[in-house]
Length: 241
Image (tube, rainbow, N blue to C red; front, side):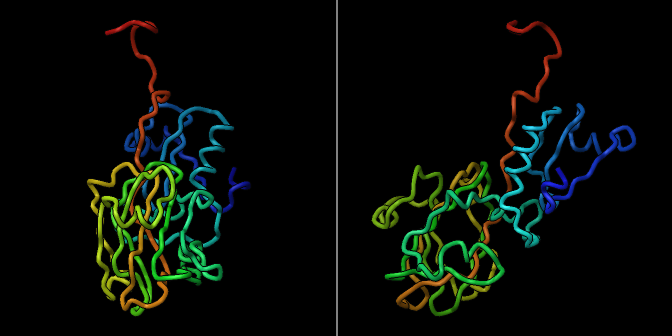
């Protein structure tokens, strides 16, 4: 697996020698595989099933970009961009020369609108996540100003719906925000998010097009309970207690 996924770090822990580490991570059986990103626990898999293990690695590995994921600066949370299913993302009114994907990397490039200043960004995550905050970088003249957020839409909404529908949060950005300042989100309302829609209503100076240099979504994965991880400790199958 380490050869097949070179951008992941694989560590083997002897639970007999490191019993306190095993206990702190809730390891009750072997083998147990635990997945982390930037010190944040993403997922756990129990049992020796090579196919299930590889599938779970691929889920968290993403596209295997060699660019190192930076610390988001928020304790207990991570940059969720590597958890985005890029094949399931869409952007309405993006420029052909500067598409949505260029804003998801700090390596350079930017997203620019096409026929007017409005944009609709649809981000699909590969598992349920909790959203804590976001960072947006853009120029002071045509960086976004008013944005509206929607979650768990069955498909990409159109511009009329984005204007009329009730958003989970509305944010007015300042030029200082566009320097990469942390923008708090309504964490209690964003606890089980499979997709996020960002509607850019206008920009700072009503310029002809809007420009986003970099977008970062910060949060953490939802730790779901898998019934297969539990083992019967008493009684027989089918009995009620």
